[in-house]
Length: 446
Ligand code: PHE
Ligand code: NA
Image 1 (cartoon, protein in one colour):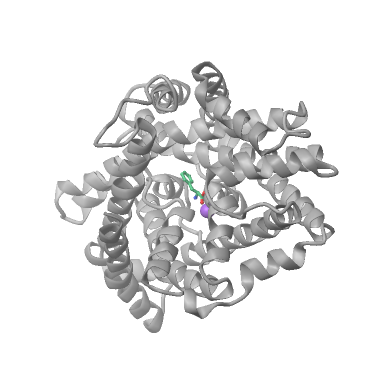
Image 2: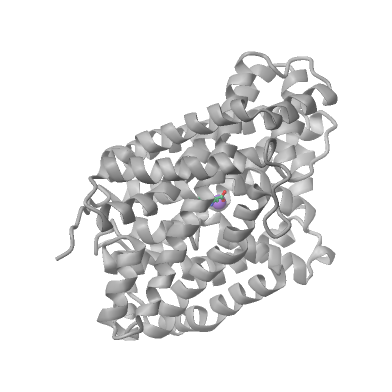
């Protein structure tokens, strides 16, 4: 028998916290609220919920199910399952592309995590106080232009991630999410409380929820489907790795529903925390890193209580980034640990150092290496495109197809506790709707 290092989640609750910690990230804090506001408000929320039920949920459950069956890292899990089911060895590709995707994403995700750390400190030292738009813009551009500063923050962020993951599933991952997730919830509630008294809460509500059915078109549905995929951290081997620490007794469908509700609530509430501040300060609610690192700091620097609110906001962002980052390192570490003689700590150091090194290339693409172009993209954008446009959809698609078409249907049905109708729905979504959804998003993004 292969070396099994498998700890298990110590409770269903900590598993939910860890999976939600992975899911809640930048996608919730800036992307989703803005998409809602721009794409039809409550009408978009409805479309999004349908997409998450038809595409997000089946893929999430499929990844957990595969991980739990294999009880190993995504690559070995797929090798074992393909053999057991008498399928082609080629299915290890699913595991490889997941682990590779996680590794590459973490390299540049950590650079952004570093920005977040740097802004957390900046909000305490009063970097934003009294600055005008030019001053705040110069601050951000100055950060991007300085390889040394970027390297410092990227390294600090990776050290935190490595420190947590090296301690293993129970002491490391669970320990971190047990503290960070409640903190995340409390900070969010405080920020929404502030928004309630800002006098602009109503405006935030109407920006986010006024149903506008005329905005719903094909591209909005595609965007909702893409978001449903990204927001649940699918296609990165993460949920497979997390599933490998699951016991038989955990109800996968019910747990998936909980994680999805928490992720969606987080995203909606984040909007109610951010937009009152944006509108109260007459700022542009536009999307992207600009909202977080330029627009909001401008508001923090010029409003009453801005130092505290700014600090809380960047702590929120840093904690959210951290719980996502540990989930990205986990599948890589699990793979290195089980496929080499290295210990957990050794495997974390090796995987972490390799990620850190690739991250240096990503951060240099903002300055010293800004001229370097891979297929017409900067290194940072290349790594982002390679993963979000190719590796993730490929992994997610293969996972749901393998579960839907190649596993013994009766066994899956018992494992998920499905009745007749449930199992028809499950087959319909895993065999057709979810794969077609991913392929359509993939093709249209090219
Ligand atoms: N699910 C995260 C979010 O919505 C995205 C993410 C998580 C990306 C982990 C990479 C790694 O923001
Ligand atoms: Na998310």
